[in-house]
Length: 146
Image (cartoon, rainbow, N blue to C red):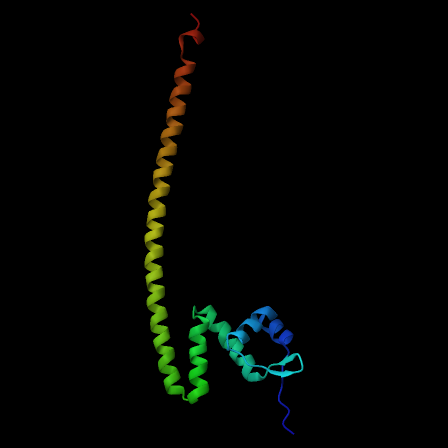
């Protein structure tokens, strides 16, 4: 007798430290397709692996649409070569996007540094001006006794 292991939505939520709502969302997006027993969702090991891949893809910056594209390729062809070419294409696209974001961040850091320097310079001028006026008022003729 071949008894396949199944998982409840709560089991998967606990294992992957996500909400059941997230899992239902992935189901709504067509990324997971659990069997049902009445109102109860029964997730197989395939669903569990897919959920793990969804979460890994998210961590790597892949969109759910990109992940779905890979799942659809696998479901249609079960051919790893085409799927791997697609993954390589997605990796190249993601790498370009991340490199552009890194350049943008570097530019922003330089701009923030420049702004910070101007603020500090202006603050130093204000403080120096305040100190000069304090010193001048303490030297006024009414405060000097002969």
